[in-house]
Amino acid sequence: MGSEIRECALTGCDSRFTPRSNRQRYCTPEHAAEGRALRRTAEDLGIEDYLGALRQLGHDTLTALQPRAAEITAAATELTTTLATVVAGFTELDTAATARVADAEARAQRAEAETAEAKDLAARMVVERDAALAKAIEAERVTGEAIGDRHAAESESVAARRDLAAAVEARRLESARADRADAAAAQDRARAESADDRATRLAARVRSLTAERRDLWHRLTTETTRADTAERDTTRVRDQARHDLDQSHAQADALRAQLTTAQATAARVESLQAELATVGAAHAQAQTALTEAQRHADTQLQSLHREHAQALERHITTAITATTSHDALRQHLRSELTHLLAHPDPTTLPARIQRLQEALTPPPAPTSP
Image 1 (cartoon, helix red, strand yellow):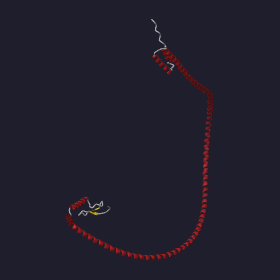
Image 2: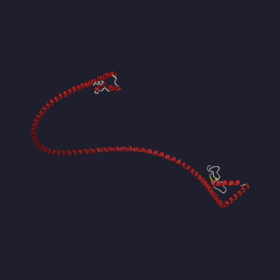
Image 3: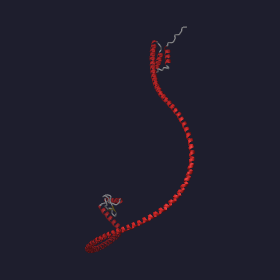
Image 4: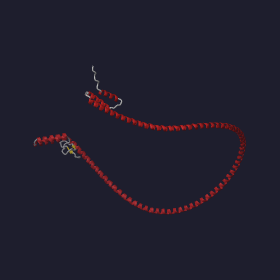
């Protein structure tokens, strides 16, 4: 419903509320129930009773409003006073606004006067600017002349400095010549003193060399004696070394002979290894041939066993056919023959053949008493 504000429809209730729907007329559910009860009561009564009820309701309403009449009167009085205050305030505001408008007009007039004065001042400033510009031009001309004078003065100053530098250089050269002369004299004096010192040192050196020569002569004599002794020792050591060298040569010859023997032995060993390899190859070939022969012999043996078993089977079959033995004997012979054919073992073959022969041999005839 937005922000709509309604007044409660119940007589005697001044509450205002925001309805939740267009049909809401009461502020609370209790007032809505009371309003519905009043409507039902009015519907139940007749028109006269309804008018009487309305009169009674008006009387009740007036009775209820009489205690609040004083409050309403006081509120109206207060509202009147407030309105008077507001009117007075508006009057004061109007007066203040009028005064402000007059003040603004006065300020505008003063601003116009100040604008005119500013224009006059600007005109005077333009005139003064032109005069200052003329003065500046004159000052620039004077400055140019001063600059020319300064350049001339600088040229003269440069020439004067050049002359002064030449004089200073001449003075320096003279001082240098004097210094060189003093230095040469000092060098001559130093050379003389150095020559004296050198002569003194040479004399001392001669004396020292004489003493050293005597010492060297003594040392030479001593070293000569030592050299003779060393030469004798060297001769003895050389002889001993020659003897040791001869022994070493003899040992080397013996070692060479042993080495030759060892080389011959090594060659023999190599030849034996070659022969051994040849023998190994021959042995491998022989082993292969032996294996092949064994396999061939086994094959032939199996073939012989098979042929022997077949011949035995034929013999047994013939014997079984020729005789009138029992079925048990035939079954026994067949089982033995089947086992013999299935497992032709050379080790057990003679025993099985012997048993078959015993089974096929008829028992001896009983002797008469």
